[in-house]
Amino acid sequence: MEELIALYQEERFKIEQFMKRMVNFFQDNPSLHEDNLPIVHSVKYRMKSVGHLRDKLERKISIGRNIVAGNFFDEITDLAGIRVLHLYPEQIHFIHKAIMNEVENGDLVFYEKPKAYTWDIDLKLYYEKLGMDTSIKPSYYTSVHYVVMPKKKSKIKCEIQVRTLYEEVWGEIDHSLNYPYTCESLACKEQLKVLAQLTAAGTRLANSIIKTKEEYDGLLNSRVVEIEEKG
Image (cartoon, rainbow, N blue to C red; front, side, top):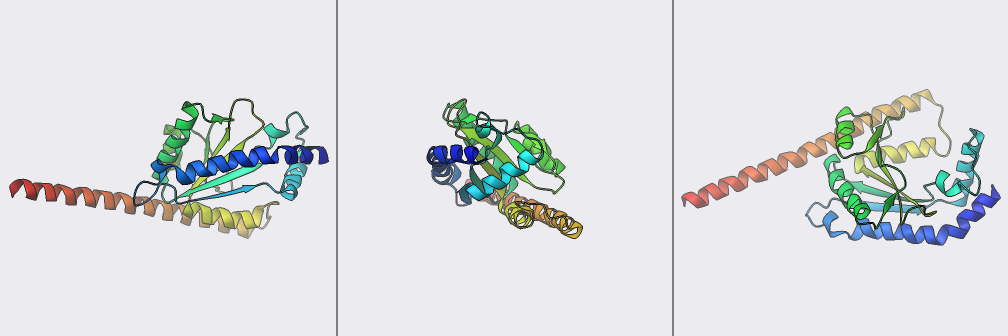
């Protein structure tokens, strides 16, 4: 255990520098901030604390995972974590496109295929059209996960979670109850599922409001053009 933690501390600076590079990518990328309603609302980030790393190693080892120096950086891929927050589901298209451009340009490498955690059938189909694997968690956890590296076979990895602000509220409450150890209260589990459903309703409503505004603006503009042509 202590040997693994020492490995993390040896590589921490390099991992943190890569994380900061990715934070700057999301915060400064003009394609994600050029409109009145930016694609990226905000970005959170953190390096895993030694205490949380020790807890995670203990949990993984307790269920039979053989974690040694040779596979440590492949087993623990969230030593650096970024959370990219946006307002409504369809914005993920632009965030995903920005990440894919970096991969296609050779500036980033995926450690594993992007994965979307969702229990919503419509969102599941939407994510699959973007080329992502999808999975359902019993807790109704919802988020899109990327694990990226600066180059192939690198020790340095960063986990990127992309979710809406509504999903972030649910995630923060779930995290307070279930991390580092799962809350066994049946009532809490059921209440979290209800909150997930309310979160999904809010997210869908936000999507609908934006679409309605776009349709309204389009109709208004067409009327203006029509009046100008007649005038």
